[in-house]
Length: 425
Image 1 (cartoon, rainbow, N blue to C red):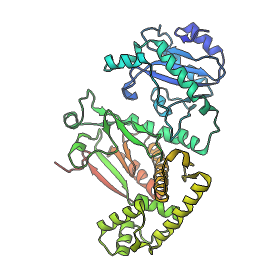
Image 2: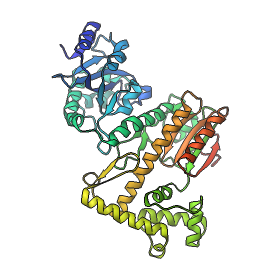
Image 3: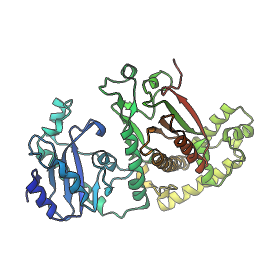
Image 4: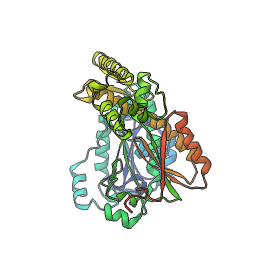
């Protein structure tokens, strides 16, 4: 059978081959356009028992494009579809049996050909550029990708593989699909020209600590400036923004790791009393010591005594076994993947991984509550969750607030009519 599938007869022949496991890659209209605004040009499928891959023509200048309405049904017949980026493919095909085989910390960067580079250099702004790049060149890239990633498909699947595929990819795909409503004149004043009233974030999940970054179109949504007024660009589609911040998040997580119980809910007030300084100074001192090491004058505080014991124990395990495991997710921070390391840095990596794993559970619970609702979860940044709130959905907001109580986390909230929450007006 020929490698290019472009008409119903060929698609039927492909279907009748009866393959159940395959590798899949999507070729969109343009690699630089967010998947929410993009469409599918070609679908590459390489069955594990086949001697070659197949390119299914959905919308391409060289293909008949008869089979587009039937692609989803064909994909549904497989038991497992291995892929390079499940979160991305879910934007195009919401199928359950996708299995991402490149979990953190090693993303696979899709290669190109000189032909791709030439077309993108000369016509990169063409929103359908991949439809005119020869199919054989896309096929060449995908065949190479399959050969490079074949060992990943054969690896035993760990606890983290399951957590990443079943939870992580799903929640971040959902957040990306929601988008953030913008005030176009304000947005274009601070960022870039746009034809839409919404912008879409893109989370990079495949980092060393699993803590995602979030950049798209040259905008770092994880680090938007808090002082220059650019956050006024982002406005609710419903009634208000509600931002929920977790208070003293890393001290709270560290306390769980070291089996320490704070005697009061306000952790920073507790430390202020121990340090004999004001609240703001206490926060500064706590975070400096949590991330950089305990000051000599505070080594007698029980929290830091226990922290030091835990850090040393972790370091010993890391040195002896080559890895430590992050709670909840089962992700292993491995010596071979992290470069130069020391005990305090290792503890920081562990805290970031633990924070992310806990947040995945929070995000999952939130999205379950908001399924089919007007209120949307539109942005997540480490210890902060931004909701575009429909005020008629009071019960849903109460349920979301109860999520943090379930996980025994203290929060504070801000509400407003833009993401600047009334500042710089």
